Image (cartoon, rainbow over all chains, first blue to last red; front, side, top):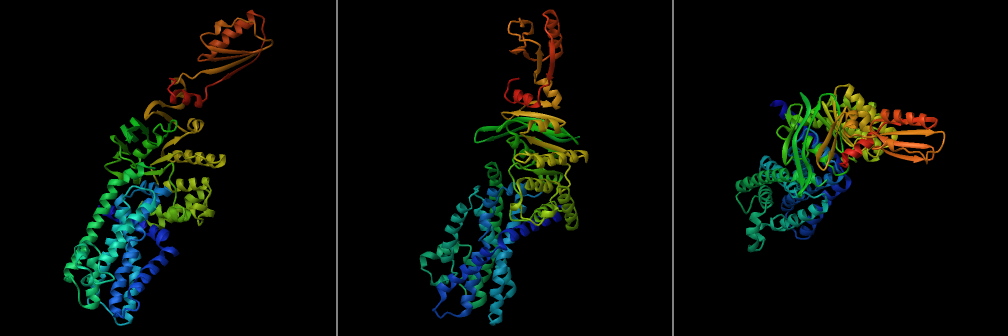
Length: 252
Length: 306
């Protein structure tokens, strides 16, 4: 049994290593991970005279949204098209291990981009109230968003654009209704029910609480929902792929 | 114990039966070939045997383990070169091997050692740092074989291993397959190259419309197919006016002084013709007996002529 777990961890790490080397350590992906959140953030905050700590909290969630879910939607369709997925799955790995490896790589990618923002805040003496819980929340947010991306890619297609379109259709509206750029309290009241359904609302609110000391929801509730969403997305992603993988391979 | 056993495998795609009750047994250490025309169900069979597709009905056992119930155990024992799969094009040959070695859970130092040995064996060591996309088709195929061998498999599945390769690369791969057999590895291959199957395989199965229609050693199949032998006899003068009805029921053709007989009992025919020649004052200049090619056997079995 112990050997099986060792094998599983090695295989998951190997997939993660492959993803980082193939997808994340690439100029365009890195630049996109920097440019998109920063320019969007600047578009909303420039000239509004808001406090830096408020901007920092928004930038952390925005960066996670744009990095942790950026590549995972395209890996499965891309590898189906390149005919590398079949090669991979004919080795002693399960679909689940492959997906966990994908999520791990994406989570690391998100964390790598968020870390300098937190470090910059620390240099400017802007620190979260509870650094440990903040890191926990950020990590689970990255896991949740990575899993969300993997979930989209469960559609058994070999055309990455199909999945990117679906992913963007969901992700972009989430950015506006989740209180990342504009606090939930300042959003129109009719958006509130939608905001509460958004998985980004909870980490955004939690991080805001950590940096600003005030939040819309009780912080423990936000943290619980952040963890819950991550787990639910992860389970859904694994289940959906488990169901669609043979259909995907049959199409080849 | 058999290395590979398949029992009544069925698989349909959108109501089209791709595999319709395939059962087979492959002994340990033998090279077994699955032959058939395009769309006969070869790749679907190999994909079910390697756990890439779930059969609709039936099951497969590899080295005593059920493919569907114990996929990881099975995949640890096998190496696979899928027909249309690729190595990661943007990873180097070396990194592709390291990745696959890690998926088998092999310790890093051992992966590096095996990767070096395999790349040397396959004449790829000098291009180990070259990205897979920059390798030729033959080199990529050799890399895929190296990737299939890095886990020290007991059973090797090769789906069209020499398809589209130049003569030298194909020969190298055939030599390698024979080496694998010498090392005790069971090899299951599909191929379009009929003569290759006849040359390499201890036993072959012919698959048609998702069913195995014949199985046995290539020499046995020649008998089973009732493949005919060509007997060509050259006489000293034209045969236009000769009565050759005694050759029937075998088919024959006369071209001036050349007689071609297509028959299943060449010795009997040759004796009759020699007697006829003696009686009719004909001199025989040359007799040539051509055994049936394996290709002919395949065509007869695969097209349902038999």
